[in-house]
Image (cartoon, rainbow, N blue to C red; front, top):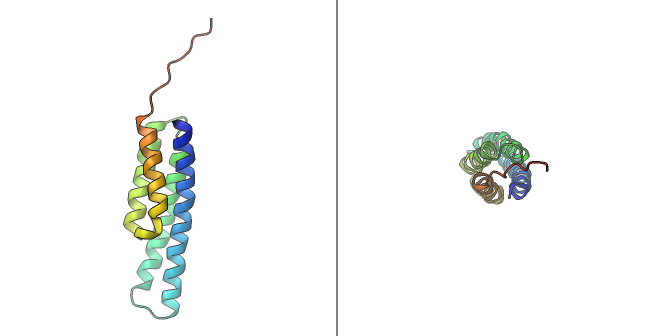
Amino acid sequence: MRIAAMILGILGGIAGVLGGGFAVTVGGLGQAFGAEGAGTVTNLGFAAVPAAILGIIGGALALSKPKIAGILMIASAVLGVIFVSAAYAIAAILLVVGGILALVTRKEPKQVAA
């Protein structure tokens, strides 16, 4: 389950970076056309990118430190949804599932060489 958590965390982080980039693009287009509140969307999109990177870091740690990795992935999902909502939906699903898998994984017993 650690490998699944790692894959989901990395894919969720990449999807989060794309979602944050989408929010930045939409906000930038809104600013170009003079839409009210478009600057806020742009800023929140920029804030979502470090949250997604946090998810990628969590995915990378899933094999060596699964509890910390699970916490990082779930925190990344929550922050991303707060920042850019729907643009982070796919990433949030992947990160939450990966985070839960990392948290519930059992420690493998150490094998003694015979």
